Image (cartoon, rainbow, N blue to C red; front, side, top):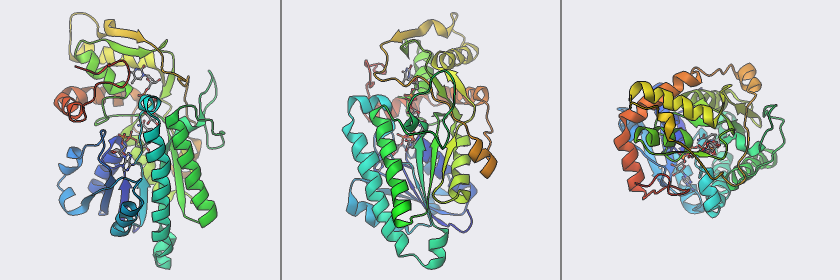
Length: 356
Ligand code: NAD
Ligand code: TDX
């Protein structure tokens, strides 16, 4: 981490932020400040279980939309590096209630940028030179692909859901703070992540838990939408490289050549479960087509040439390896899944799919 010994991670109680915090605690000596509002998708048990957490991890329970609290948290953390992951992250929820996405992802990013800019401007010349603000974003800002082509850093923005529009707005704010105020920012736009500790509202954990419980597996529309899946630890590798070695002002697209239709993903999970939990009949019998998501993007795919050639990033897990690990993890942690769902009173965003 090249001397960056105080790191502020926003959204570190969430799925990807939690993986970043765990990695920073286990593979660096950095002091980690975890700014999170501790919302429905947050869980700190995976961090607090680490022996390093007591001395080197500090939770700052703050909502980024609160300008004063955000400024105070940034001042307290006094960071050399900010990794900004906090966001409302679920597309279906953004369709049900877009307001929270504008608040957290747009206004929250604005408040954070203002607080970080004030902090950065007051740093010594040496610390100022090494400082980075790393904004973590999504490939969904680029819109929807047809059957061919891939997103890269030169693809025009064309967000189509309230979630992706709010993330696109936050990307533009971050770029503007670089061009106008000189804040040394790095952006990454990553494809769909999966792995342990993902809140059970996203496709892969939903399918694992539904199938394991013998319940209908909801497949939106014709199941032919394509996502480019990346194991979360491979994303963390890319984030740490971009944060420490990325060129200020530059964006990097991250994806692991993991294109699959949703139907293929669901079938792969079912066949994994057929081996682990033989049920007499194949789990794929549970697949149930449901009404499509409004405005459902057809296909995402990333060309990761820039981050691979400039920063030497390569994913370490094939989709098959990552998925097998993930399926086993969810079967071993079904009580965690039940607990987080109960704790937030979650009854399924669409069609009551996760209730009961
Ligand atoms: P998540 O929903 O699991 O976690 C997000 C965390 O941010 C939560 O702990 C939440 O409490 C916190 N948060 C939200 N609004 C906040 C606010 N106003 N103030 C403080 N904290 C707030 O999400 P995730 O899947 O871990 O995604 C993390 C980031 O990565 C997001 O910015 C997302 O857009 C981006 N991303 C996600 C994926 C993916 O597949 N999950 C892919 C590419 C990029
Ligand atoms: O029950 C389901 N059935 C289904 O067919 C769910 C939850 C989803 N789907 C489909 C919709 C999508 O085509 O599966 C695909 C993946 O859906 P999600 O897991 O909701 O992910 P997606 O909408 O692609 O967005 C994700 O990837 C990019 C993350 O939630 C975002 O935060 C990230 O930026």
